[in-house]
Amino acid sequence: MNRFPTVRPRRLRRREAMRRMVAETRLDPSQLVLPMFVVAGEAVERPIPSMPGHAQMSVDVAVEVAADAAARGTGGVILFGIPEHKDDVGSSAWDPEGPVPRALRAMAEQVPGLVRWADVCLCEYTSHGHCGPLRGDTVDNDRTLPLLAQAAVAYAEAGADIVAPSDMMDGRVTALRAGLDAAGHEDIAICSYAVKYASAYYGPFRDAAESAPAFGDRRSYQMDPPNLREARREARLDLDEGADMLMVKPAGPYQDVIAEVRRLSDVPVAAYQVSGEFSMIEAAAERGWIDRERVLIESLTGITRAGADVILTYFALDAAALLQEV
Ligand code: PBG
Ligand code: ZN
Image (cartoon, rainbow, N blue to C red; front, side, top):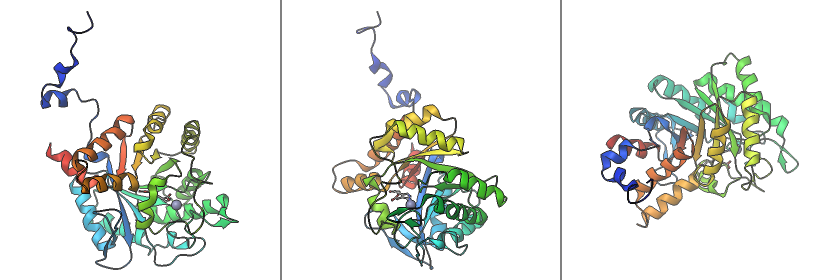
């Protein structure tokens, strides 16, 4: 009875309108967040060769892109700063006149409807490119915590709605929450990069953010790719510390991890489709080997199907435009 020829799954795939009707996963522009790289100066738009269509931008240019992101109904922008001065502790990260606070203030004023995210990490700001001050040849966890909190407070003060620590120090959600609350920012949300792997997919980003480590790598603080139980542990710890959202990163190659974090958490789950995932699609499309638009939507659909509520993606603007067309 419940088999061929009575049962024919193809009956519901016959027409586009029917396929849309029974779609189990729906993508919406409001789920997509655009990462942006902000620099000092004016009218600066410096293309990033390994990330076609993306550029380091001064605040005035960044505000225009942010207005576009708002007009297309996205879930906002996440800002990364490239400072003029780097030092061994990354002190430009909490400079209220640094690129990120300046951009946040300008966006709050000129694009008030936009959700404003600020990435919190020190690797763009340290002279050695690691995610916090060093002790020996690795990052000093406990000395990094108050500095991250100070940066988060500076971004909250400038108008960030969500701060997103990406450093992978232990205890940073507790430190950020305490710092934000002490400064009167108890309403500012924390989206923790709870599960962030030491991934080779970050290559193009490190060109974009000028944040490649001067020596060694990040394997003593970011997670080891083979581990899934450890991902659950990291996610639970950050929930206990008060994270309002959890992020998994990268996204595409870690969809099992996204599904697992979705199952264990009652907060929204974000996934970061990182620079390498983006650039691989762009490179293959440029050679005519894949259909760019279909692959970019399919890649985002897969990440959503795995369980992500929100996706940080360099395709945010193009994907939002494509989704509005259908
Ligand atoms: C900084 C940070 C990185 C990314 C986001 N925040 C790079 C890294 O950890 O080396 C990667 C994002 C991307 O590749 O798009 N901590
Ligand atoms: Zn970092």
